[in-house]
Amino acid sequence: MKNKFIRMTFAAFLAHASGIMALAENQSGRLELKLDDCVKIALQKNPQVRAAIEGIKSSQAAIGEARAPYYPELKATAGYSRWQTRAFLPEGLLPPTAPKVIGPTDDYKAQGTARWILFDNGERKARLDISKVMAKISVENLDSTRQNVVFLIHERFYSLAASIELKQVAVQNQARAEQHLKFANERKSAGAVPESDVLRARVAASEAKLNLVRANNLIRINMGWLNTVMGLPVETDITLKINTDVPSIPTEASASSLITQAIMCRPEIKASQGRIEAAQKSLAMAKSEYGPKVRAEGAYGLRDDASDLEEKEYAAGVSIELPIFSGFSTKYKISERKAELSKTESETEAIVQAIQQEVWIARSQLQEANETVETADIRVKDATESTRMGEERYKNGGCTITDLMDIQTALAKAEADLVEAKWNLRIAKANLVKSTGTLIARHE
Image 1 (cartoon, one colour):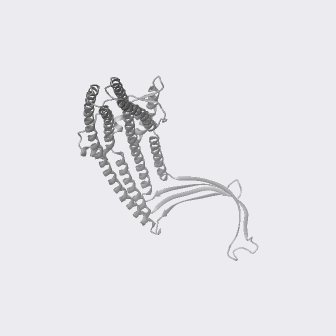
Image 2: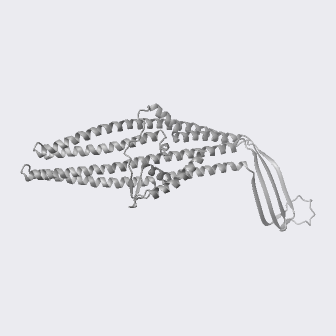
Image 3: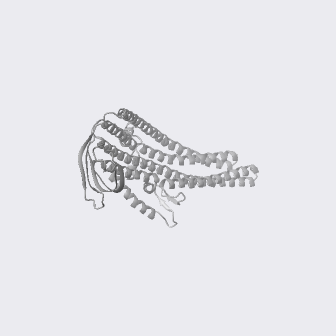
């Protein structure tokens, strides 16, 4: 049922994402994308997701292959040969004049054979069970890949949004720097300050312009990253439709409840549990080699020294194969499978511990991000007021140009820190949801 759901969901993405690509283009030919649009495109076009889907198809085919031994094996053969051989018979059995060589003669044959395993001490069942478990693991691997890709979309989308907002901060800072240069020129014209104040203000204006250049470059880089995660050409021109609302995620949830949710939902844990089951089935398959194998065999054909094939041949029977000694191969194989099972169980325990740590860190980072936003917001308010007061003091001769530039720099940094803090908060929330294994569910 889950595999069917995956296939239906992917088919829906194929149709829906194609519609998104067509409808999202504005008149300038640029793609206008919301976060959900980016997620849907990535789940359709990202090569890692497509590879995981092909992995599911491969595992489904492996199930069919494992079922094959339950059916009889039928084979048809036909051939022709011309042969001659020496007859080694006891002396006196044939008259002295009898030929010592048989042939040459033509040998025509056409034959059909059938072979059916009646009993194999559980080997076929164990092999089929392993293939079914591997198919489940491939589904969980797809879920894990989709979770990772969706989180990368969140991270790159928010990073691009942050760089766009940082550009606005750079534009505002450049405008302030130009205004401060104007103040310096006015005061120099009035003879209140030396030429060095103008030069200092001009350097600050140049630095502000350079920061704007860097902001534009950061937008290009982050746009390329987002396009790459979506599976689009890196140079695709896109525009973001940004929802400024912070995602509603309960930050008061206890660490224990989040960890419990992660253990229940994370596909990595489900896949690891599947590997334990596969190791158990592999051990059962190794033990089956101690038991007998019973096969039904039959053959019917025609064989003659002429192409008309008038002579009939047939055989039918049951064979039993019981291993007696194989150089202790089965014993060592069972020991190997037991060790593999213990290893897989230990690896699963390590994965659970790593996910618990991941949830713990993600929750702590979210708490830090919340506090950082609050602190950064206060800093911007204080720096804005400090800048206003500094401008008034400079115009009235109450402070130096260096004081004003320092205040301007502090405001620019505070504004940039606030922008990064707000978007890092969104990334932190997405990371916490991803750590609990429920990020995909928010986009379905």
